[in-house]
Length: 102
Image 1 (tube, rainbow, N blue to C red):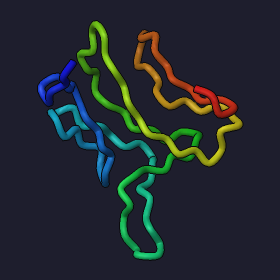
Image 2 (image 1 turned 90 degrees about the vertical axis):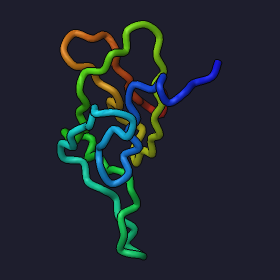
Image 3 (image 1 turned 180 degrees about the vertical axis):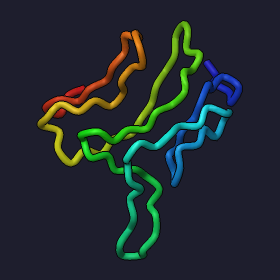
């Protein structure tokens, strides 16, 4: 199977902002801070979440049928439960990490 740019509903590289670089589904940052490289005093381009109430919200996407989701996570503490993906409204889809397991 070949995936083309037209097959992608949204793409959030989260490099300095929460823009959707494929379409017009930009996210909104709610408390997450951009990580800086103190040695060079520059933005690294990723976000730090406090594990309490920081999140990035995105608009509702049309993902009816089969879909794939990809994300990279670097956790400071994987011993407690952390929610990575949480649904809006009545959707039945949530991804958590607890004790180092997804």
